[in-house]
Length: 124
Image (cartoon, rainbow, N blue to C red; front, side, top):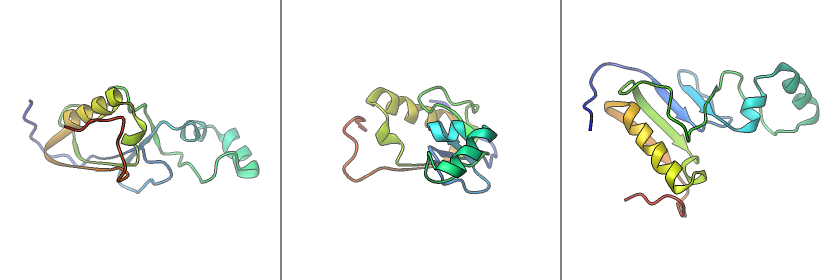
């Protein structure tokens, strides 16, 4: 296990959906978030409402089942709400390992999952 030190104020909101607070790197890979990067899609969606809600244009697009693009020990806070339960066991464990890799020493991780979760991820 690595020992991370240093000062960082990077805050990740992983699987952000429509919740994109200021001061956070809001990350999602949902189809709506990816399509919202295109002006034409935003115009069409505003008219016909293919997707309910407004995906922020500032969402950082990243597949959370792949290696995170942040350096080791570079993140102070990680928040993820109702994302982990959508991952397979292998992807869920990888996600948690990536959180640990990028988190600095004494960093904060807050992961919210439904009470009935998680049949796919064994957290032992």
